[in-house]
Length: 335
Image (cartoon, rainbow, N blue to C red; front, top):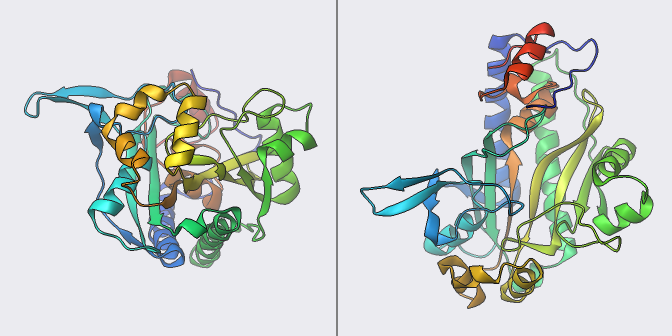
């Protein structure tokens, strides 16, 4: 069952034909801007990985991957949740150099996703990863990369406004940075989601750092798997969405775990059993490059730049009867 909310008086901003043109424009334009900003090259990526490899992204640690047996291989496969771990291994296998990275079109199925205006069981995003020096594992390097990504978003928005004169988005350019603990201290009586709404309403675009850590209140702002991001050096890029009147995440990213932070986070999260998996054994042994990376939602970015109220207006997925009924009543075409 979905939790869909359509703003009063909302109308889809483009015809179906023009919507497809705008989606194509955004995806083509943004990936060029992103690759230029971060020195990335496009590579092909898997739709599924071996279950026993430990390469699948565990997200918050509770979502069930779509699994299936492969008789011809003699192994079980899992449809990817994201490529957070696969990308790091690919950088090593493809012999990328320090300062260079890869990006790919990632398509995933997240069967346990709770459906609403922003969430679908189908996920499409640009997954990216680059090799960094040991001295780059710091907050300032993380912030500089965030600014580069936000600039790529802004450049794409400006070009879209010219190509489609009926679209008039005005995105903020200056990123506001704070940690989840600073956000809790600022709004102690609010829930984590309410805090995100409040800070994005005030600043327009926010990078919320250190997601996955337990706060002084004894809770975590949000869950984050222990084996890809360093919880001290990660975060989410959040925009204020005028159409929906709420915060709007377009990217989860961070500097990845090194052997020391992986060792610590596996123990803190009660996941010490993963130490025996091939990927984790390589990482703990220092056999993988130091990297940073993230995912940027393709449909999320299209929603933000075009100004749609529901993700089903910019991507094809499956929806429950209630979502279909509400959208039909509001004149919204789900692709």
